[in-house]
Length: 334
Ligand code: 13P
Image 1 (tube, rainbow, N blue to C red):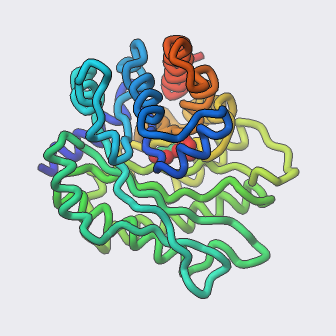
Image 2: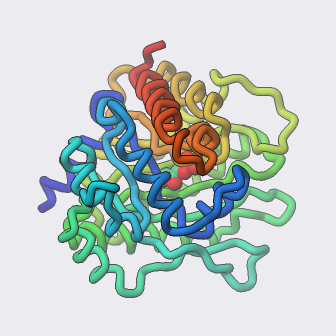
């Protein structure tokens, strides 16, 4: 079972392919839909996700898809289950297993991620349904004036990620560990790099303490960049330098695959930053560097669709093109 989980971790980052995060909760996808006047109902969510999963040629660029639980049971128009469609295309099936965040009392609105209750049973049933990996997202916020992220938030989130990872591995699912340090705020790139170092160091300490096999995980980190409200000028090369330095300092060489989040960056920004990071990283780096993008893979496709059936084909083409651009970025080609 361990060999299989290690192989899944490697496969997710192989050949310049990356992950499509199509695992938005019902509330989150509703927000995305609302920007384009699309009603958030079962039919529209199924239609949109079917369009993504059936898009032409995506198996050349996409190694795995993270699904939200309802999609594990959904089917294409012809009755083929989504899971089977992905398997037929040689794309690994993943599942989001956390159940969202709750506030940590006594902090400035910092959060902990929930979903550990009953996780072992859920993982076992997802594995039977065909899932090979699972994702858990922790959220941390940089706010220097209020001392965020606090030591408590860092510790709590690292521990929850590690508990999740240990449970997943006990049920044969490769854990995707997502400590997402939000882009929100006016912090500098230097601050982001310090915080990212601290958070990742705490995460790896917790993973080791929880007996997690490091070769059988995938890390999903944020890119290191200034906050979205920062006035600090920066170029893709700065993002690349700080991100690579941070990873070199704290990610063990036993990790085979690192997939960046897009974290609210525009599609072009995320692709350009990924390309710069890959070019900057040493050729003999121990890990594959690629993407696990949600928003930065889906935004234009969602806009192109806009809830209209006759635009589904065009939207799928837009999605494939974006997946291709990101795959090229992950290969360092342009
Ligand atoms: P974003 O790329 O929208 O930050 O989402 C990524 C994600 O959820 C990876 O699992």
